Image (cartoon, rainbow, N blue to C red):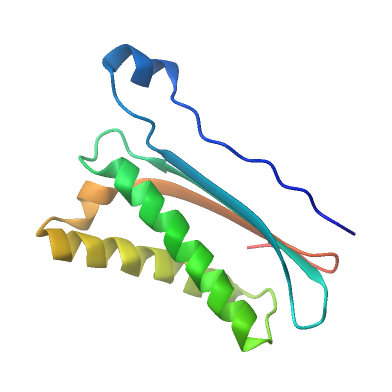
Length: 126
């Protein structure tokens, strides 16, 4: 099995109308696990329109998720589990809380939605 990825973010019509920038972020990558099996990682995030820094929150979420997967791949042993999904979400949450603290703001100011997929030939999910 081989993967090809294409991804992009686009400014929505309501953002165009109000003059706001795109507050979405996405990321996809195919890596090799220690077993030489391909791992597809895909993450999408949408900044909450009600949050002052929702777009930044979306970027932070994607960066944190990508960093988390890269660290797991370097460790070698990597399998789908509830704890993997939980740890990934906690890494995203921690990144947003750290950015808020550094800026003297609340984590809510960086609110965003986040969706991730990890998939290989043998397992799908997360």
